Length: 83
Image: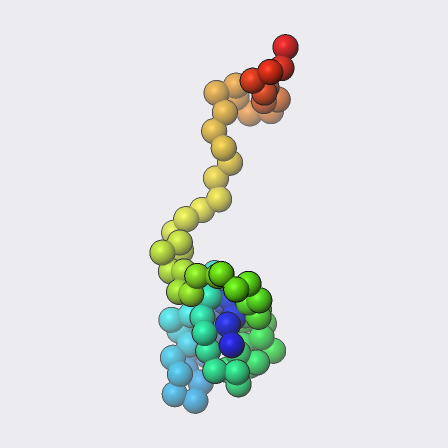
């Protein structure tokens, strides 16, 4: 079962499975029993998307940044065809 990790579990291990490597944002394929436990403990949500990349660790350091604007903060953006 696929789950998206929402927060790293406090437990380091469960039934021989290391949990300390589960990072928020990662999508993992895990056994159903483990997935149910992670969801019940609010460490994960069920991932329903078919095309979700598994093991998205490549994006851990990416932060949401607002698009840059030369006009400065609080200034409305103009479209190409605005007068």
